[in-house]
Amino acid sequence: MSQKELTELANQIYGGSDKRVKELQSMYHATQIQIEGIISEFVSDDDNWNLPAPKRLKEQLLSELMTMYREADSGDQALIAVAMTGRSIATINEAVKVSTGIALLSLAHQRRLQLADTLQEIPQQVRTVGYRKATKKINRYFNRLNGRPPTTTEHEYELARRIPGKYHRVLAQKSVSKMVQKFGSGIDTDEAINRNTVAMMNKVNQLVDKININHIKPQEYSRELANMFTGSDSTGRGAVYNAERLLRTESAYTFANALKDDFKRRKVKYFTNVSVLGSHTCKFCERMDGKTFKVSDMQPGVNCAPFHPNCQCDIVESTKEDIESMEF
Image (tube, rainbow, N blue to C red; front, side, top):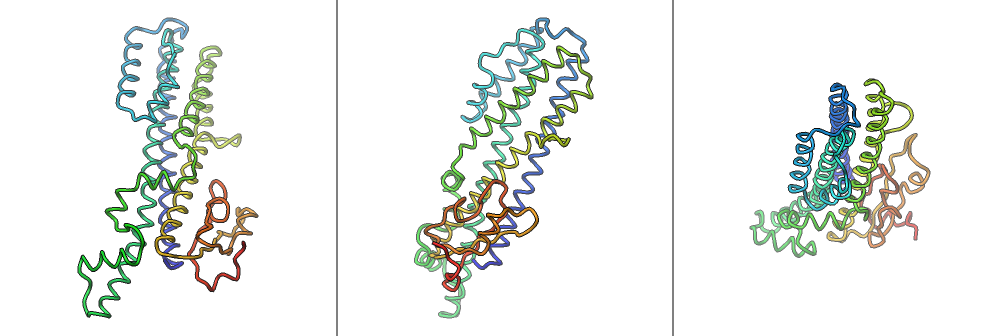
């Protein structure tokens, strides 16, 4: 791919990530409002939260949990088991915690689906660009040689000859799930989401206890929830920041490893790092800007982007003329 094509592809992928981040922020804000509504509803009942929970409420919450578990995949089931096993719904206070916990479990499920969708798209986008480029070359070759475009059989033969391995879009799509496992950063994203969710549950539970004991006003717990979820004041960035960072970092790793796979298939020998030089560019990224390495040595986080969470550096394929700047 040319530098222009790679830049356009990077903009398409990172632009998609920006869109996904906005979706993620909306998910967190909606869950924040939902949990605030749950707490406010219990507060408005003006009951003593230390009293036994009504039987109908307990049955409703247990039914929601059982349905959620039954319809969940293995990642969500593991989280539900960890977060809810041994939980009591004996008192109203405990019922509030379980009810808010269900909202957070739903958020975790949405995050898992969104991350999977995002990462599955990236290798496919890279391969599609490579496929289109190879197809253009084949068409030019046959038009020059025979005065006509290639037949389907000739096209497939040329693809197989020019690019090792199966490369066309249909076959690429079938292997997407394996590619996601292969191309990510190596961290267990399910475990990361589960860990973040349990941490949020603990914070919300502490707030519920605080409301029960101190009878704090709605505007106060509304403010605390906002800070907890989105970091709406200067004290922090909220839980959504960790979710955004996971999404951006995994997208960047998947993009880099998909490019490496594409380079190898097309027998590209070298790549060059291109940093977005600006006031927020770190010193390491500045030093790596313009550095050229062998594709066979390409290693995200070591000699190619992403070098750190939220890294915005790009990778472009290079030719022999760029070898002068290579470092071994």
